[in-house]
Image 1 (cartoon, helix red, strand yellow):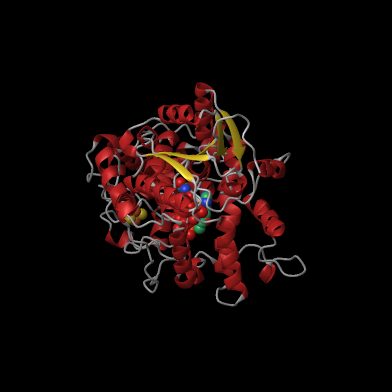
Image 2 (image 1 turned 90 degrees about the vertical axis):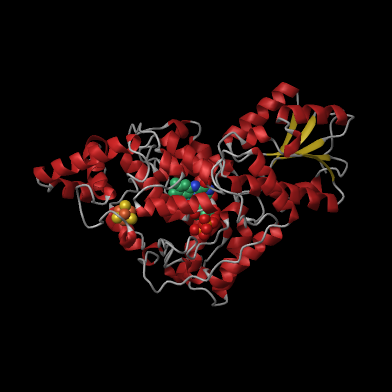
Length: 518
Ligand code: FAD
Ligand code: SF4
């Protein structure tokens, strides 16, 4: 048991992006500890967060408060309507408790950690920090693994994690199926035959509906709408979404994880990130259930391995890299990209159907799946030379699952190559050909995916070659870029001239022309 150090009553401050349903902490702190939860509208406006994201956080907090009260905790809840800042609310609360002791979970975001420490300094708080339990390994263990390695590869980290947790291993310690990674089998293109079962999604209850009204009233200028909110806000709902995924979509997750379908925003994806990232679902539980289904013969190995790699591999890797490389990573701009975001990025009013569709879907749902984020949105931002800070802001604002720890490495590292290869061995870029192969976007686009240059040619086509041409000095020596640079080198000078001219006029118009003209 953790004891309080002074005479008054200690506090456990729970922040909205860390709801410790599965943590042992609540069993360890004294039951007379007051639980403090603050809905700060000032924090909610730090970015112009999507309205559905705000509903998720505030509704999940209110449900957690109910759950704590039902377990006899004394919850001190400061609602949005009180318009309190963290400092103001904490100061009043501590005076009432007559104690400066605050238990808190170690933040997953560096900016949140500094903000909490700053509040601590301002108010003379004595923090007692506890593990946040959102991840399988603490950041210190990742740094130990990374220590001394010149290159940090996901694949090596993932194998270490499979062995450490004994996941998908045979009795001789080798991987099930004889190989560690089924990525090469998991890249099937779009086909009309793909018919994912529609997801089960929870309906809002009275508490959520109340939050939806308040968010509309208090954050009118934020992107998106609250209507149609149907993300899980309790562990039971998150478990139900997991059940639905395991039953209806996991088996096809692997082969079709890169496919994008206009009428099917989720395809076979899990929709678990919004729950995993705030503690409604524990990563270990998802991995355990997936492995169990594989062992019972109900799910094929490439799909089980594919999903486990995302959570045991990518999610943990991203969290570890973030703490290893912050704060420098969020200042990187290897490609010296300076262009501001065009306004239509918030509305989707563009003639490019892939962007129109993915942005429209994101405005509506606060969700796009990985390939929509990486190979449509980030691909476009990289090719168009969008400033990585602007790109990061857009991603932070638009997604239900966005937090600094996950956004910075995914945007500066994986998506925009702003870190110059610290995370990916080469930029994730493509021409329209890839988007055409993996989706049904191009068949209803006003641009022609087969045309390379000119007014009605797919902009991804000329921007791709222009990008390579513009960044020859920085990228040509990368051995993983040898094939595209060899192809660039074979282009006739007349073709290169057309590529440059089409790109120049497109990029000039990006800012000056009104939406729907691009
Ligand atoms: P699924 O495709 O079903 O995957 C299962 C789970 O694996 C996810 O729920 C997630 O927890 C984990 N996962 C897979 N890839 C990653 C990854 N690269 N990083 C971290 N976790 C991963 N993920 C976020 O959680 N928050 C973000 O803000 C976020 N921003 C992104 C921005 C960019 C530019 C890119 C390229 C990726 C981003 N991702 C982010 C990673 C990934 O796209 C989302 O986790 C995923 O799309 C969420 O949908 P899902 O739950 O249906 O995932
Ligand atoms: Fe996107 Fe180009 Fe296809 Fe249009 S043609 S949907 S712009 S890739």
